[in-house]
Image 1 (tube, one colour):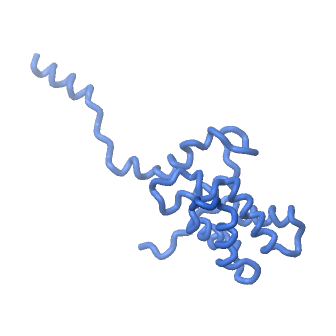
Image 2 (tube, helix red, strand yellow; image 1 turned 90 degrees about the vertical axis):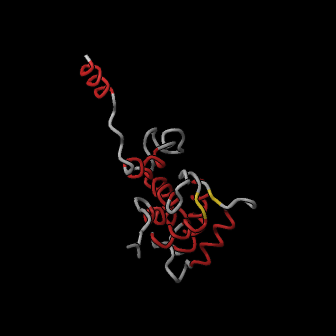
Length: 154
């Protein structure tokens, strides 16, 4: 009878999870955590490629980030990694000035809507020979589907 009691205890016990399980998909969980709640212009359950790129860059390097707001360093990284900065028409200084102009006075981050405004500002400088609408579409194409480039990490 003692053997039977021992066997039922071991059956009811769940095996402990390995400590690496939660960390593997941490970024994916943060990205998808509120993705279904509200997006403008996208169908429910789907992120636009531009918004997905925004969220990936917004959480880059910050374990507490939700992907809803982007800091200046991540904005600058996005512009470098996606080749928005070309060195002639758009420089790092231009990117920083646009970020400062778009964000609120006391804020240190921008939202997705402000992000789109900032891209419109930069598109006028980057693609001077195109109409405003074409320039915005071109800059969106540079960013859509991209993720942060991790270099120099061993």
